[in-house]
Image (cartoon, rainbow, N blue to C red; front, top):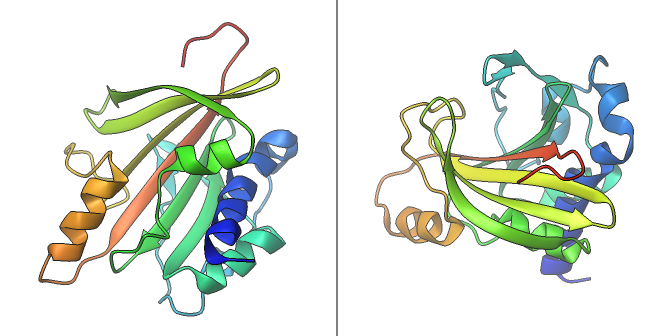
Length: 190
């Protein structure tokens, strides 16, 4: 199995498994320890505790996610606020293993459509799309920034733009890739 196939599988598991019935059950669960999703090459990460003013519940990694985290040059964790899934990836160097969520959803058999830039109520820019498979419809929004709670709107909505800027940057830094997956009602716009 090559690294690309493994990464796509890990993204798929991170994005889809909680939405197949685990999300409602996990919203009030205690979750795993934050270090459980940290790869061995990563320092301890202070994961976000809130998102858009709502408390987050840390979800334990699946076996596939744990294997992926061992190879990922950073850390990966999943959270829920009870209504949506938040996938957080943290890296300290530019890497092609951090790629757009749309790649994961396509590999999982979803039809990805309607990619567009969006600005949330806090003025933060995101890249959003709708992922559809059968009757399931999801709104997926993602961005990369230097702080998980960055509300000033800076950051990247395009993974390639982030990669090249991070690759050419002379000083060290750390980045947070945030992916928000929200189930859509039938007939709702993404």
